[in-house]
Image (cartoon, rainbow, N blue to C red; front, side, top):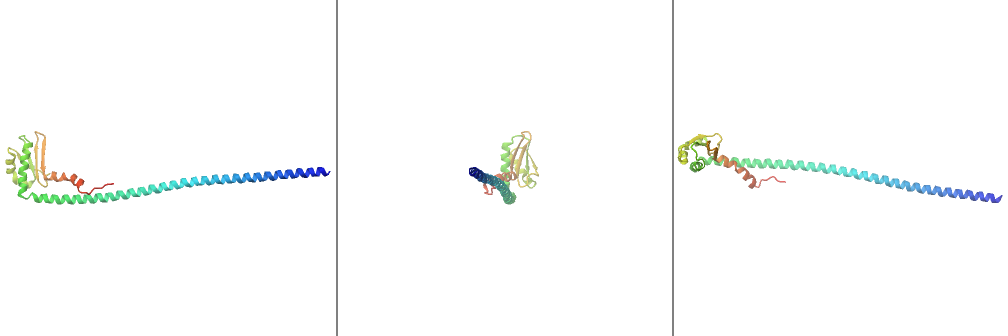
Length: 199
């Protein structure tokens, strides 16, 4: 009988050893599985956190860009309005000086010269010379300078001074007014004043 007991003991020991090996193996596999799952969860968590961080950074960058753009636009608008104020002031002063000039003898001489120049351009016999109301006093001098028959009339469009010649038959206008000359200086002023609004 002792052989049977010893065989049974050996068999039980072998089963216990096998069971212990299986338990250790399962425990080890469980630890590996747990580690993998934790690692996978950690990686997914990191990915989600990275995506969230990127999204938040993008939102912040967009908000900052929008605020910078608004600030730049507001700043440019202020600069543009200030430049316009300066331009308006400069041209108001220039207009005042030109109006003062129209009270001088040099102005009367320039009107006569303009009438002669218009005569060269408008060669038809239906020419009307338009002047501002105060310049009607030069009517005889203008007709004489024109060199042939013409009409002299008042134009409400001429505020500063000068002459506009019109020939309906030729379909031409010759503008020698100070108003137009001053108006034409706006573009030159914008280009050369140094008061540009740029990026």
